[in-house]
Length: 71
Image 1 (cartoon, one colour):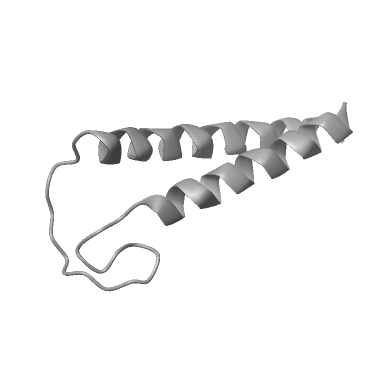
Image 2 (tube, rainbow, N blue to C red):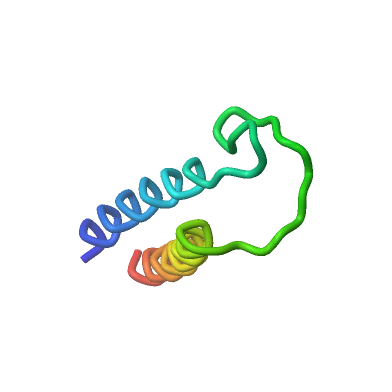
């Protein structure tokens, strides 16, 4: 059981890192920094990616707690 939770944590963390790096803020891009600090509403793909990132964060916390209680 603990092994399957550990593999799930690795998968979720990998997806979480990718989703964070894909988020672009400003003209310079999120991966390489840069870009002015603009506050605007998220629309379309950007909003979906933001929601996926939040969901992956919640799943990561749940898996981390499950791993703690199993071990």
